[in-house]
Length: 329
Image 1 (cartoon, rainbow, N blue to C red):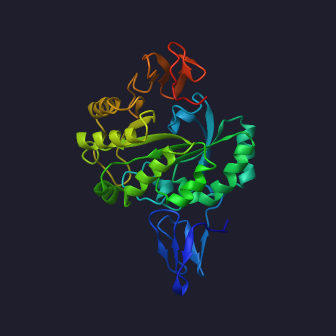
Image 2 (spheres, one colour):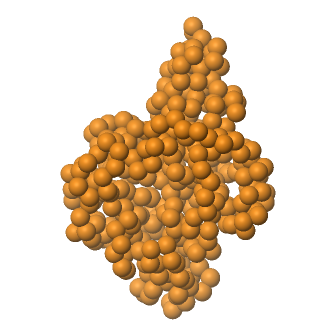
Image 3 (cartoon, rainbow, N blue to C red):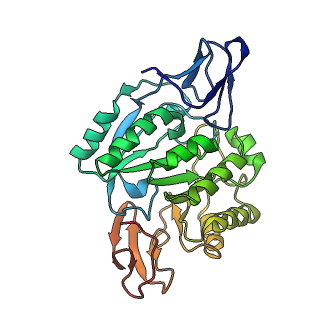
């Protein structure tokens, strides 16, 4: 479905600049931006991905990963085709880096599917929901009106003005912070780091729930200095933000060996120096995905794979000492 795109400027000679994300693509008539979903038609920027979904599935909310936002809930997951970054290690490259067949799902139908399944809400995920901006901005208010939650799993590669609008209609974010060096973003992702840091700062100051994920890639972003910088940055936003370290496995154009268990444990230990909640994912280590009380250390939520059990909460506070867990129920 073709719709006029948001956030662009017209230039001379029927050219436009897309201002949705930091790529700031200058697009000639008949051409499309880096995301493959926004095209210049006669000096008008349009999007051809409105409501065009690559898949719809029901997932545990912990799979997003969101550990402190309605734990044990199931959520409807869907996403668009393509992305505004070109990560060499992308695990969903077949739908993010290549054009594939999609199916049109109007906003009202997505809401109805979620209600019929008795789910907590919708997660816009799998590829990059930022490039689905117009669809999300239309769908999110309908989901909220129906008492459903709106989640974005994003690379955070978005300009401040469109992000401010999203923050008004999205309940929770998991944002990838892929590394702490511009050289990493340039070499591995074909993007810029500072806009991602700005997006995280803006989101952390909002009312939206925020969790952060870092995929640890050996020899690329796994040095002690990298990990300390990342943890210190997250702590500067809030030491209560859950940080998920995820283990890398070879995929797409990257064949570096998988992240060793020792590296994951080292990242966890560095994270725990400054943050209350650090988790290890994609590696199958028992005990490193549990939530413990930041006050007394009591076990609050036990996780094994995608099985989640709430064991030590009284509402959102620790049943033992009464400390606030930061978990939204």
